[in-house]
Image (cartoon, rainbow, N blue to C red):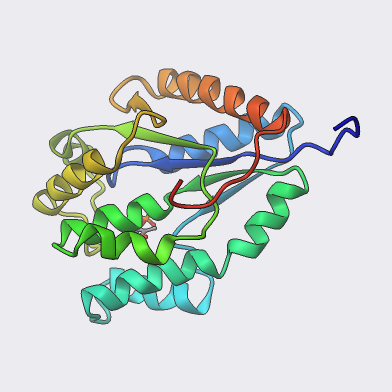
Length: 212
Ligand code: TMP
């Protein structure tokens, strides 16, 4: 095709246990890319600003109780309600840095004992990330960092199960970064893999859907 199609943004997902540093790193990465003049936005799931997001937030704060399957589907619905906007942004050339995505959905729910294939099903058809970065930290180290709040899943025993689920979800395309390195070193490694991925998307890598 001779016509130069306008280049698209990249869908970058950061995953990891609670307290692995995802949120700080996505903030730093956003700032860097923005300052470099890229069109970029910082997103997160759950997105607590929507109606569904408020139900999730209340569940996480232990202010409401829900069946494990029901909350799983709400987390998924929360991604579905942002899907079209996500596609629009990517097509218009904006790179999205997303703090948690479908992998959190599957890892946390399957850690409760739900069947993994059942957990994956409602995610089918969501946009597939161009890059998944896993910020790797042991559950014990993460717990030592303190700041585990009062939220439902922030408990060592449960995080150990989540770590196991993540391990079975990981594939060779994931970039794993040691999250116990100095914050600046994690940042540097993250920039490298992200810039590389953005270049691939810029050159015309097609968008795809879960689960590829
Ligand atoms: P946050 O601390 O990143 O806002 O995420 C809130 C909690 O929700 C965190 O413990 C991970 C969990 N979670 C799920 O269980 N399923 C999901 O689909 C997502 C996005 C998060």
